[in-house]
Length: 70
View (cartoon, rainbow, N blue to C red):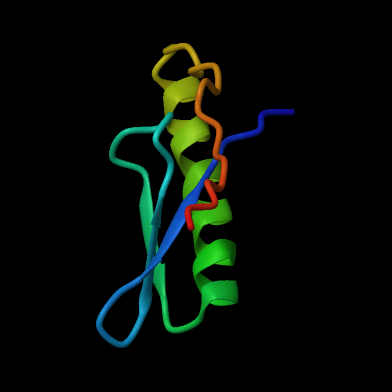
């Protein structure tokens, strides 16, 4: 099993997502939930393509943290 951080951003009328550890792997959707599902499918397809091309699957190195500022 692989785990990748995804970033979901609100855009103009929809949402978009990407993974810092998988350059070029992106997805969009009308809702945050739809975008997350689409990103899951995009990551599956991305990993399948890497495997078919005999390329290594990158290790997840990204993480996130919230910072509270007064």
